[in-house]
Each structure stands twice: as C-alpha cells, then as structure tokens.
Image 1 (cartoon, rainbow, N blue to C red):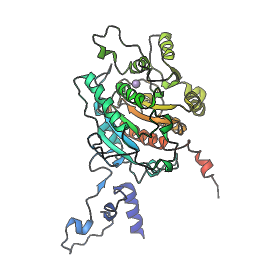
Image 2 (image 1 turned 180 degrees about the horizontal axis):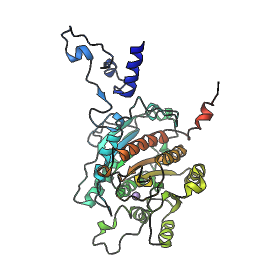
Image 3 (image 1 turned 90 degrees about the vertical axis):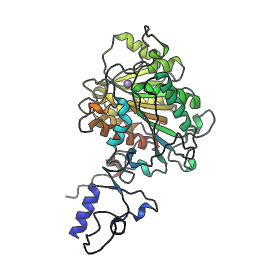
Image 4 (image 1 turned 135 degrees about the vertical axis):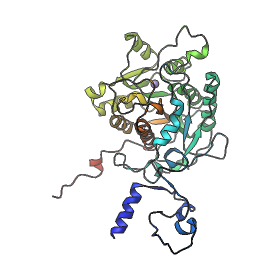
Length: 402
Ligand SMILES: [Mn+2]
C-alpha cells in the first residue's frame, strides 16, 4: 500500500508522455516494474516502450502531435500551434527568433493528460478539438520582404486547411458565420517572433474574414506612424508600426483595444494617432483603479460579437515576472493578473491568437518561457470555451465541516 502511494506520487511528479492511443496504451511505467535481476530480458520485454518524459523527447508544444503541416496537406486540425521565428524588425534587443523553441521548452511540464486546472475547471485538450503543433515556418533571416511574404503564405496555407472535428459537436459556435466563404476555418495560435509578424497574419485573416477587431496586450502602442525617413518601403514595417500599416491597409476595424499600456511616448499626439487608427487604451494602472472585472467588461463591451484576434506581447507582464523580451518596461501586470483577464474573454469570437516578443536569451531559469507556454494553454481553453469559467466557489461551494 505504501509502495503504491510512493509510485503514484512519483508518477504525478514525473508524468510520462503516453498518449491515449492503442500503441501507447501498452507503454509501461518505468517506475512501476519491480527489478528482476534473474531475468535475461531486453528493455522492451522488461519495461515496455521507450516513453518520453516531461523533460525528454522531441520538442513539441505540450507534447502534442508534431507535424510539418505546411508540406503535408493530409494534416488537418482545429487549432494549430505555429512558430514564426522572426526578429529582424525590432527597435531594441533582438532574439525572438528563438521564441518558438523557448516557449515549447517552457511547455514541457504541460501535457495532454495534465491539462485540467482549478481556474478553468476543464482541460483544453479534452474539449473535442484536435490541436496540432505544426512546427516553425522557415523564414528568411536576411530579407524582411521575403520573410513577411513567407509568414502570410504559411498562415494562409493552414487557414485554408479543413477543420478536423465535426463542427456540430463543437463546444463553441463555429466561426463560419464570419468567413466570406461561409466555411469553418481552423484557428492558429502563433508563437512569435517579434510583433511585426502580426501584419502578415492580419493580411491573411483579412482574406478570409474581412476587417477584424484586435485585443492587444502590450506595454507599447505599436501604432506609431512609420519613420518618414525610412530608406525603403520595407523599413516602414517594424514591431512598433505594424498596427498603423494594418489600419492603412484596412485590415482592422475601428473597434480594437489595447490592454496594459505603460510605455514612454512623445506626448498626447501618440494617443490621438492611436485612437485615429481604431484603438482604445486600458493602461497598466487602470487595473488597480478599475479592478479586473471592469477591465474585462470594457474589453468585452468594445469587441461585442465581432470576429476578434488576440495578440499578446509578453512585455505586458512586469519584467520581474517575464524578463526575456526585447523592450522591457518596468511596472507591469503580474502573470496571474493577465491570466485572469484572459479567462474573462472566453466566449468572444476569436479567429486566432498569438504570443510574441519572447526572447529566451534574456531569461532566467525559463521564467518567461514558462509564463508564455502557460498563457498559450490559457488561449486554448479560452478559444474552446463558450463563456468564462464561473468562480470556483460557485462551481463547488466551500463547506467548512470543522
Ligand atoms: Mn508589441
């Protein structure tokens, strides 16, 4: 009995990557087999298949199925995880080309059979949706014009793939009502990459959905008009100007919203410009003054029933909790606060999401990568829930029996 308890405790601490498939059902727990020194057996005979553990094996997000979806048209899914290793349009520290790999490293303790949380009351992996890690898009690191085209072509390629599930069994209303072709398209959660990658993503989404709203978590506005002395058209497009360009191109509707803004600006003119390209601002301090429920209410009210894209720059979080980013700003939100706001957005009509600006070289003990991976798991729950989870005390009231 005591041995069983110990074994269960060890397995809980070190979950083995064994998916519930017929092949994997035969995998054995290496901790569960008592040693038998007399038997002349192979590993397979004695311990079973060579299972991957949380800290071993090939690197895919949350140990999900990994596929090269761009080249294999037979791969379909409801939600794709897709890496965009791009960092050649930043104004300060580079390094987000390592973001997708860093976030996958941060997700190693996440697992399809360990996805249930108290805060959501569900596991995103058990909602009937097929979620696949589609790998990284090989992007040209020397020519931004080519790289941005590669991002758009890759995104559009996956966006046109058939969804995997029977949509009538969906836990959320299908997005087909918003698509110009009245067809349900898969959704993509992109791992950046610097924030510039959102421009070609919005171009791709526009072809399917037309103009969409954006919920933008960031310390910075990212709506700055392009530098007028730029020597080339390509140099207009940076991680600080891409939303301005998106507005110029008519990709976003005038009902977008920032959350977590606290950067230094030139002055009020920056905010007037920001509003003129379709954004409202929730500042970092607003969270203290208004509280989380009111921040959630304002975002939901702004977006309403429209199709919406979520873009989260990891620098919205305080650099103390997420130091590995290119342009850190002191005094940000905590990871917990951001997670609570994300939960409050479930049920909006999300057509896609990203997390960007993770530059793992500036990290300490994977702090930022772990936060980013955890937020991506929240994105999955958010996209697969018809409404925000009820407070835990409502789901299971506290009963004090003492
Ligand atoms: Mn940004």
